[in-house]
Structures are given as structure tokens and as C-alpha cells.
Length: 251
Image 1: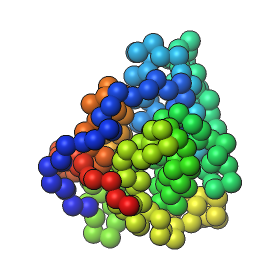
Image 2: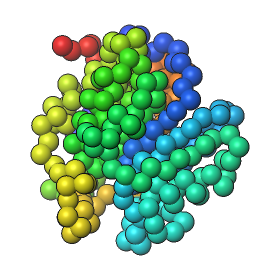
Image 3: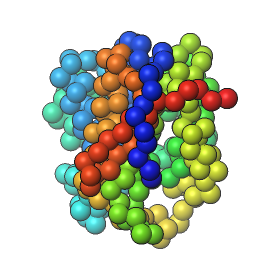
Image 4: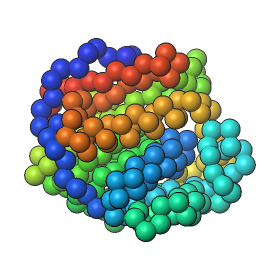
């Protein structure tokens, strides 16, 4: 992943954001679990009475502890919702959805005016969520990921893509327009994998997951405060470098 050049000025993406009441965090692994904790803490500190849907069909296992923080093994959505509800009860309502996102159920998970964090480990899920958002009039999507430690990669690179729609029009580019590999990926969905396959994944670095999660929540904060000036952030955790990028809308 190449670090991009200095961003140009933004467009309407920097306008003051509406006040959503629903947040959807899809994928609760190395990045998503950090995002859920940061987001819940922030919204609680703002005394925002909101609902957060924690969505993941996978479970925490002991072997995940090298890059994920959790209280006990079990369904990720339930374990994290239980943990965070104890600390933020009365303000933030956490609802676990123990399911993977598919083309069949995405319309029941992502709705108008939602703020969506899409943090799975496969492009197929990213594209399903992106296409659902493209059907909506008003939505904010923060889609993030990172490289694994494989094929000669260091595992320190990551990025966050911001897709905004307001009044039925795009304010930023859909992620797959800039990254066509999202739309053309042949990776199987988690629901299409066998038990053995689902357990196999590229090793990830804890520091990179934390950096990407921080960048995703920081992008949300910039949007929330009406100061968003980019549609994507590239980062390298090893170099402690983040590079925001602004682009003109593409057809």
C-alpha cells in the first residue's frame, strides 16, 4: 500500500453531520473490537443516548489473545456487548447480533441515517455493505482494514475509507470505485467457509489493528464535528505515519 500525497480541499463532506441515533459496527475482530470500545466510550462521554449494534457471527478463542482483548471466550458480539454494557449502562444501548453480514440480511442490519463501521477481514463483506449504503439516502460508512503478515508484507499498513451519502447523493466516492479489488474479490464469505477454512487467516499485528481502529474513530470524529477534509486515510504503524487523501468524485 503506497502512502499518498497531501490531500486537496474537501467538498460537502466537511459539513456539519446530523445526529444519528443508531450505530452499526460490523466485524469485531482485531480492529472492530477496538473500534467498538473507543466508539462506545466516546458516545458515553458525550451523554449521547444511542444504540450500537455489534455484529459478528464469529467467536473469541484462546488463540486470539495475541491480538484481541476480551474477557472470556464466546460469541464476539455477545462477549463485547456484555463487557461494555457494564461500563456504559444508562446511556449507550449495546445490542449484539451474532450473525455474519450477507446480501440477504444486510438490509435488516444497515438502515437510513445509520453510522456504519465496516471492519471485516474480507472484501466480499465490504462490498455488500457498500452496496447497501449506496441504496440509502443518508448514511455514513467508515470502512477499514489492514494487511496481514504474509507474502512479504510487514503487516504494518492499513487504511480507512469514508463513504458519505446525504440527500440521495454521494459526497465521497464509494470505496470500490477507488479500490476495484473490493468489487472483484473472489474471497469466500465467512458463511461460505468450512470450519477448517474459517480458522485460517493471515497473522495480524496488534499495533496495526490499534492504529487502524484509532484512525477509523478519528475519521468519524472529524465527520461528527463537521471538519472532515478527506475520504481516505493510509497509515503505516511502523513509521507512525498517517496520510489523508481527498479526491474528486468519479463517475
